[in-house]
Image (tube, rainbow over all chains, first blue to last red; front, side, top):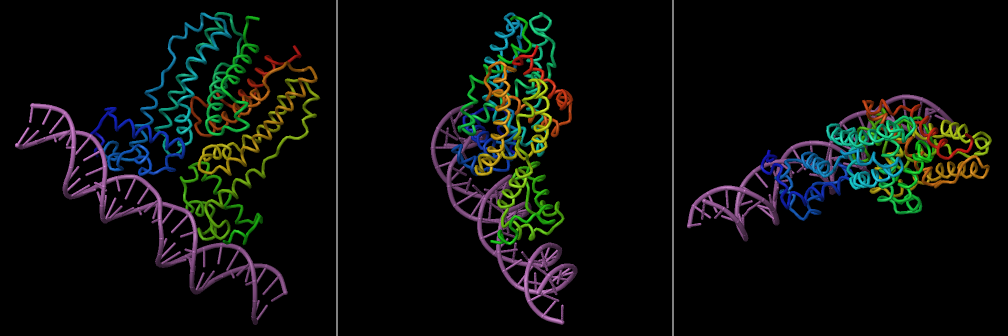
Length: 203
Length: 203
DNA sequence: CACTTGCGCAAGCATGTACTTGCATTATAA
DNA sequence: TTATAATGCAAGTACATGCTTGCGCAAGTG
């Protein structure tokens, strides 16, 4: 019950443990790594880990919360709506989705553990929902401005998100032949190009 | 060392164990489920499991091999090339990608376990590579027939595959608000529509 | 100085789990 | 009928792992 001993304090040790946990969890899964290994990786004693987070599950929750707190959700869509469909989409993706992909590991983890830890999956799903909504707002905004043809915006948003996200995951996990074709720039360019050609009203 | 006792024989018991294992592995991960639970689910004694597959890892390999052996890789692309870009793509996706999605769980598993069990991830990656190649052949074929504009075919293939695949996974795991927007028909239709509008030469 | 706070260290407990062994049982085939 | 193969059952081994307890040390703070 020492959960309360170190509440939200982001102390030095606290952070080191959380970061080690994130690394371990995303690489091996929740059940795939031991608290001993996490503690060792963090350079602290295993007991300290339990003193800070109470239990392994508590550590998982703290790690997810921390990870989510690091993410920024796009708010001012108007900035992007001022540009052309192609340019706005390109900027939006660069500004926000790159950052999303930096957190792609934890999203992947949430997906993998969604069966065993529904509460945690929910936290991550809420974040995905937010960023997806932002993308949809962009589409709807451009549609109202006559810069974009009508389409199935929810599906489109999903397509964009998952493509970027998965490309980043694949790249991080297997820098092999497949990943060579999936470097970030090419994927971003192709997504923007495809959507612009398909639904843009500029050309 | 009873690995050899029941080689490739797909006996009754063999199959029941493998199917139970696939279910358990994909739901809880490799480390997330016990051989006891798998055996119980299969309706056999735990000892039988070890007599058949030698070890838990042996069972995983057998399960993956079985799953892969059930997949069919598209071969005769010409059938689809005879049609228009839109129609051919639509049929190709229906005929083959639906089946791919039926196996999406095991692909997901391979992805999740790619760190801890590289050999198994390789088997699955080879399959993905094959079906991706088939899709690219379709694109290149239509390009040569002047039915399609030039594009980054590898990235395009990736986009199509991952979109369908993820939509199916999301749908199976969380039949909630998000999944409502991602039903199969809508995703398929949007993907076909997007690619046709962007790169089709027909209209 | 006294007191608290944070941490390390050693040891251990309880439990789950992969895997084994020996024996009894059934059914099939020679 | 006898032999063989496939399975169930009971019990146990070895080990990893989550988590606890008790102690001591060092640093900061009143």
